[in-house]
Length: 116
Image (cartoon, rainbow, N blue to C red; front, side, top):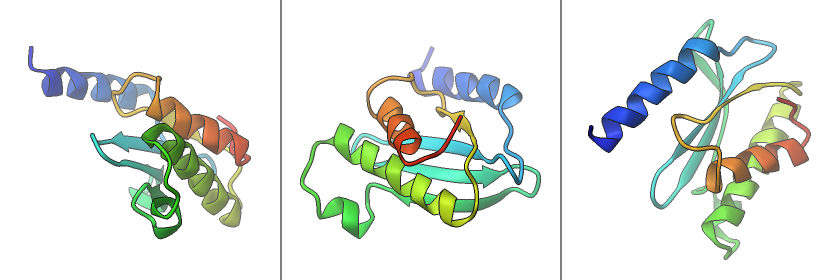
């Protein structure tokens, strides 16, 4: 089976169980080969409440490896969530293994004060 199709099936399986609410949004992580993106999503209205990526100026300015950049992305999304008055969320790994850069985003978000 094609790798992308397999990952898509995993994503659908995760999304059946994980849903974001206005007071407890879904922290969705997208990982490309070069960058990583995180969004806080309210699934009841289908809106993105906050987003962070490894392409933001303050993260790009730091010359660190991809795992450390991912941790910074997690801290940035946690900071934006606390500005919105949110302290809990549900984690959506986006079909990726909870390992490496995806785990680093979760760790950075936890250290920033988000609970999931």
